[in-house]
Length: 296
Image (cartoon, rainbow, N blue to C red; front, side, top):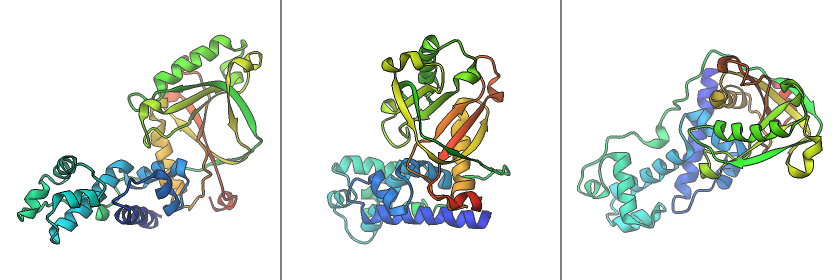
């Protein structure tokens, strides 16, 4: 499987690299990349990171600058024209980005001083696989409306601070039920790696215990369908590692088609009463192709 997976990862890099090259004079949109590669828009950035170990924005910039380097090396010495051809309106911004990536300026290249960095498109996937085998529990769920609160703010690589505030408000309103009876869920509504992190939204809700306050609360629609459920064990702020493993070791090698829906997190034990390393969270991925259940 490793060789097959490495080939899939390399194919993703090549696909994205080609799209960026062909559209380098434009603003690269997540919608465009997702459509071009055939992945769900919501999941694409995470899948790309899981497959390659590179943040998408980092890779896009490097690919554009690689094209600029190629143009200069092949005789176009007008730095303004080159900058515009790869989407930079400001030659000074272009030169700063170019030097940051290649340790030489565009003018240095014109004078024959070439960088020694490898091409971005030929970079090998650097995401390391573990020996852990991920197997989902398959669940067919009805549509469910969960009440709770939305908030904004991804801070220090996590929604933990925001989530703590939201769940504190909900706990003060909820019926006197146990943690398990309340069935807390969380949803990263926006991908914080694909936009402005301070504006990234998170939903905190209880499946039960809030019926007397629906008019004061907001709702998240947990859609009906087939869901693959994985269990993360450990701190909530390390959950992204398990999610990346699911993408890298299950979604990609099995060619799983995910729906363009958010991952739903269901928290199984109370973080106020449980050591962080023993926390368990169910992660629900909405599946497009039902045959995936048989394949996995």
